[in-house]
Every structure is written in C-alpha cells, then in structure tokens.
Image 1: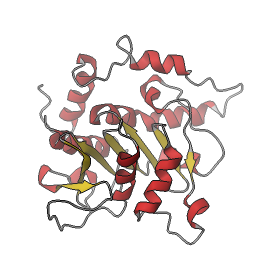
Image 2 (image 1 turned 120 degrees about the vertical axis):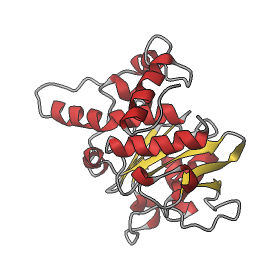
Image 3 (image 1 turned 180 degrees about the horizontal axis):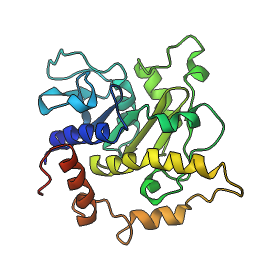
Image 4 (image 1 turned 180 degrees about the vertical axis):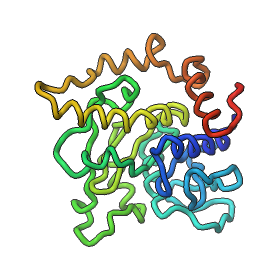
Length: 242
C-alpha cells in the first residue's frame, strides 16, 4: 500500500475502534519530501477516501494549489513534524476514555503491553498556560501547535487539557496499533486505581522489550504487525491480502 492508502485505512480503522469519531485526524509525513505531510480535507474519519487527502507544508498551509477546506487543527501536525524528524505519523483525537486524565493530576501510564510505545512519561499540555483563558481550547494557529510540540518534546504522547491528546510514531501502522489499544489501557488503568494497592505500570526496559523483535515488532514488514493490520483492514471492508 502507498502512504496515502495507509492513511485512508488508518482513518477507517480508528473510526471503527472509536478512537476517532466525527472529529479528530491522523496524518503521515510525505516519504519523498520530509517538509510535507498528508492529511485529509475537513471530513469525519470514517468518510475519508484517497481523493480527500491533501498535502501540507510545515507551516500548516495547503500545497499544490489545493483550496478545499482543511482541518482547523492541522497546525498540530505541522508543528510536530517540524520539531520531530523521527516522526512519520501524527494522531489527534478526543477519545472519551482518555479525557479524565487531561483534567486531573493523575498520570496516564502504560499498564498493558499494547501501548508500550507511549513511554514512561505522558506530559499534559494546557493551552491556558501560554495563551490565557480566552481561547476555545483548539489549536488553530502555528504558534499554538509549536507550544504543544514543545510540551510533547521527545515523548510519543501528550494530553491536552479538556480536549484530547496527540500521539505520534515512526509509521502509520505503529501509530494506529498503539492508538487502537489506548482506550483499553485507559479503562484498565481507571479500574485498577479503584482497587487497593499501587498500580504497577510498565517499565522502560519492558517497553523496549515489547517493541523489539522478541516482543511486538511493529516494523512495516513484520508478519505479526501485518496480522493485526490485515484484520483491521478486513473489519472496515478494505483489502488486507498483503
């Protein structure tokens, strides 16, 4: 599959698993131009097709003369790609299970192996800190996006107060695989905190072990990774025979 086809599949898969709904979006860096990325026009994830994909520069401006309405928060993607050359996929979502962690001091931790890529630290970004309490909580300028990217830093995920989260990864497949498991991790973590005793989160060493060849190995050519990806493609009616 091409990166555009992968991006379309990612939208459909994340909508099917209720990570994305009418709002939220996922993008992919252009593999032939590191200063550009692909992102759908303003459309709900379940409706995205290949003809809906637009190309943007790292200021969040549409390229190739494309004048279709873009997502307001495309600046999230632009700023992260500009600051993180290691990132090839960016996701922004408002998944309900994660929202409680955006408005409290409780840390969002990886407690199941399927989200090992989020790392041991998930910072929390509050737009009010840098831009006052008169915003609508949306990332609608490149300055907002850069501030969020600064909070994200070298991490793979950041919470956005009263809004949602942003996550990123080295590939569409890997970012989607982690994202599909994020709501489950949130539910398990919330349930565990209602029980007696401390919550045991994954360690950095365990995370490294899961992501390696002996663990989850989510490289694009990994049979284990493709098994999950092909199932998700089938679930949304796309061809998974690869």
